[in-house]
Length: 155
Image 1 (cartoon, rainbow, N blue to C red):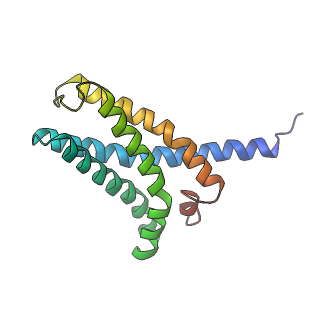
Image 2: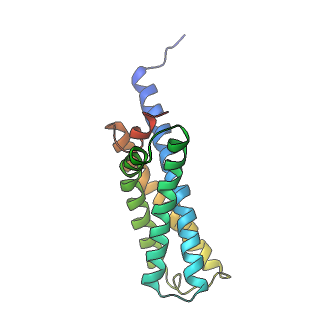
């Protein structure tokens, strides 16, 4: 019978943790991006304002998804906020930069309306690409005891 190699188990565990952290980040970013772009598009706002509200809401929802369970487990608001910022800031920033950069590069995506497939396609593909850009960043941070590794100290 072959025994699993401890290093292989650690790598798999690191990959799983990084995947979960990136998925968590994607969820917050997607909520913020979709809500922000829907609001901006419905109100006819320009590209800069549209991106700005989407990014602000992505950070808000990304941090909120980390804060909620920390606060529910009895961590003080001050400490939970510090943990959320430490856990999520780099990941959200990478995800937002890549996602918005992708959408800006797709011809006509920023001018597309809510009823246009191009609007939803560019947003979905942008988030998909952003996930895979943020994954190695999260993996490296967690491997160094940073990023979402900070949150796991409270679980």
